[in-house]
Image 1 (tube, rainbow, N blue to C red):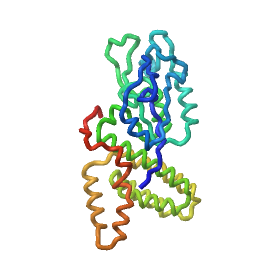
Image 2: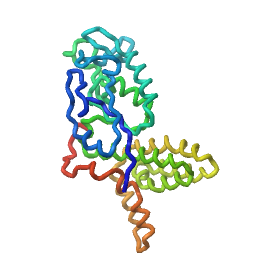
Image 3: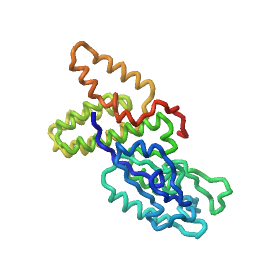
Image 4: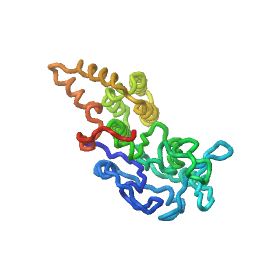
Length: 287
């Protein structure tokens, strides 16, 4: 079984380049594991907006307006507008993407849990936590796309969900490239059980969309399907839904080979290359 290669934006300081504010590179085994199967799109927003290596640290700061700014305390520079303008331009030009693997706690790249300070004094407790500035632009521009940091991917369940989603979105892009409504029906059939484990209402809504697509141009049918597919996969599956799906799948097991062929083709049973899951992993992580 072959898998399309997802395009995943990567914080460049993770494993690839010594571009962190202190001139260091962050070791990240997950990057080396992904590289044979994923097309990585490395980027360092802080370098791209003209900050050097090494550079004085930047941070998120709470403004009197109640909003959050991006500042470099040592120089007094407000980098908010510069980062926002660059982020919009880069994301517009990045092409089709399937996910994002970002540096945890970074004021530019951290997907969640980045400290927001009241001012230049870092010894004071942060007033709140938010996504980094570039990560916030990603979440706004790419709703329902998988966005994780290297710390959370140490958690077995978080990593499995991230991998499932990026390979499903890559598969969607590849299938859409073939283009016909029949291809859309085949794609939906392949993902029925995986959709079922995430959201039965979404699975049925997508099935109705496919059933009604025969009178539509193929491009329109695929365009309508994509956002609902991403939204369904963004829902967190529960243990009970996995049990329901396995019971549902057991109903297909008969002496006839056809239903078993159907199950063998289901993305639910192999959503991504098995080489990307290490059975020795404890499943423990920050997530």
